[in-house]
Length: 157
Image (cartoon, rainbow, N blue to C red; front, top):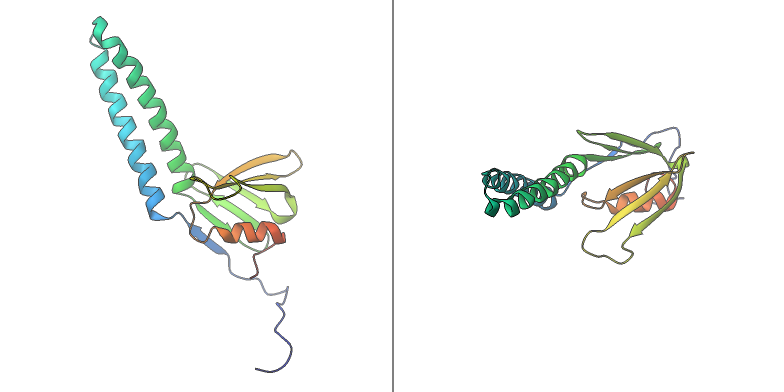
């Protein structure tokens, strides 16, 4: 192949890049949600017996239900969502919400924690109201979003 390299034609749209959650984080969060919801319910049911010895079980049950609810929300919001990256921007689409952000609307973004860590994620500030979007990096090929944010467009390697 000789000649100048092929430059992308702006009139031709690339197909969107659809990133799904990795299986291991999805199953871990789902298992944690079910575990805490079930054990919280069991502790709460045992503690409602009316005896003084059951009062700590009520608090344990309430705490277990709270943690289980938070884990279930995270699972539904992020683990069952898809991250769709296209020429206009990116969309976090899932059963609880759909958030669409254009590349031009991004004001600032940062990776937290900066160097790896147990739960790396992106915090993206966008729009006129300086809305914040939290995107955990549990999606397959999630570095594509970081590259796209750095380039302010569809990621080109």
